[in-house]
Length: 615
Image (cartoon, rainbow, N blue to C red; front, side, top):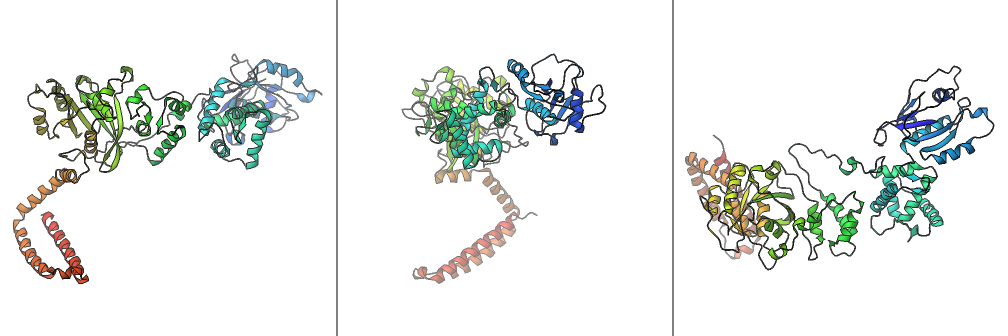
């Protein structure tokens, strides 16, 4: 009897090895089997015990190293695959398989039976091949001999694989999907005739195994049952391992959470291909084409997952329709969360995080839900256990679509973690009707953000209520002026329709340009007035203006000379460019105008270089 055990937990090709033990009573020929395998001839002198032998991976069919142990004792555990070996078959004229088969059927851990002869070299290579196969492709986890059917875990795993391969989600694997499956698992497609042969086998044995010339789930499971019954366990195991399953038919952690190396100071976002993939998954499961996922459709989408990753709070985290179902926009938003980018001057990102601070009852939760389009009346219907501390949706800044993630921070002033402080922009919310509400915001700002480079905005929530003077050393407006913050922004979610979203656009803009001092008089960030105001108040323009003033003061003499010189040149150019109304239609005029514009540009650039030239 040959007993084999696996030495490595993982079944990744070329990353594990198999250890084969040959326990038996004395003088049954196990040492001769090992010697015959190695030397390919029967040894004249057989030692009492052979040393452990390692067969390299490149000479084995399964491409894994194999360690063969000549074991004289007995193994205490039977929780390993077994192979019954009938040695010295050259000494008998008849086969002993009729005697062995009942024993094999009695013990499910016995994988197979082999008759061999070390003297005649009969089935020696086959013996060790089957032993290695029993380690790498065991029958036990897949098949129940008593019931002559696959085990539940195996059926569950193959069902998931079928659904993943069913690209159009119609419950049938058509020829294109079968070839996708074949290439995924075996790196080669099936010929058209081979596809028909497979389907014909299923048709012959299963009435509902083929539908609309495609393979159904029942037909798919039948094929794998047939593979196992015919001893082709490696086929099913190859499929299972390609889709991330381990020896116990559980999904590998490396498959569920593949390692992602992010260099220091960098972060990750979904690229265009990732969004296209997520869009295809949404379209695949949105069967009624209403651009929203019903609870049944959402459950079907996550049916291939080991667990449901989204809880009931997801409906209060992203945008939903009137029925409370996740919309396409909300679906994409849920996948968009990211780590904070350390490169604060980068503006090519599409996701920005805003941490929302405020005392209890200040209106933080309402501020988050208003971002999703929920007014106060609708928010009152949210159950406490379905409440979300996050809200993510899209905003448009200068015509570009961006995602803004709002995170409500628990109002415990003394226990703010690094995660509570890490964000692209800070939102400080106070209740205008509560005279003690602003004090919390002021303390948070002074304690954690006054010396940081993270932009902050003050939100005067519940602005539909009468405003009461805040019991603090200065008013919220004066506080913002002292600390160079935008003035407090009035906000309320107590509206008949959806709350105004302009404030979220401004938050995203400040997150995109953290070094700019935005002083817009409105919050649209789209009109010409906003663009001009932001540019005129930007730190870049202020810096350039200060440098110009400094240079002008130091180089007044040079400037006077240049002005006088350029003034004379300008007079000459004006004389040249002086034209009558009739000349406007002539080509000569436009040629002179072009020359004049070019001269102006050159002279202006010359003055700029002189003014900024260092000493």
